[in-house]
Length: 188
Image 1 (cartoon, rainbow, N blue to C red):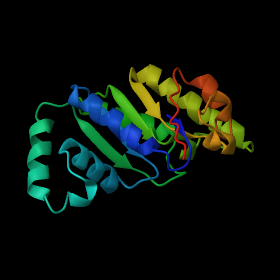
Image 2 (cartoon, one colour; image 1 turned 90 degrees about the horizontal axis):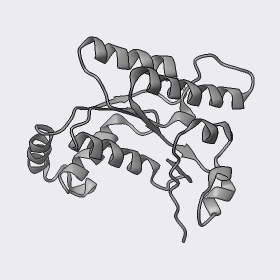
Image 3 (cartoon, helix red, strand yellow; image 1 turned 30 degrees about the horizontal axis):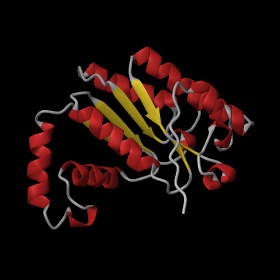
């Protein structure tokens, strides 16, 4: 998912995670920017069709609706790590820890790859970025999971009516690595 700052990338990632879980798929959601409690609250609000600001006011109704839906849904696990500290190797280890407990995932959401740490640091920021995306792709293949993440547009993309591949921020290798890129487009 590619979009400008505050364009709804996290909201889109949450929406995909929710939809996959409701269809019975097991989802691992790793957040590196927004706290896991906020992600959970947004999911609860969406699942219960309650405004986020109203969740606490209607907590018992929300809990019951979420519990009823969860009984028929796939697992949805949320983990939070500080920005810039979580690497692809750490993601692989997390997936394998769950696999050791017989928990397999169909979808892994990383919110978002641009703020992941590379497995090995290079002096070149573009090499660091490229290695994160290549390593995520490798994990998806090795673990047989769909991998979903987000990236920022550059300034021109933020202003554009339609953000295109050339509007990806910092490193065009991201575009080369992914199978599908969806842009979020907003204008005044």
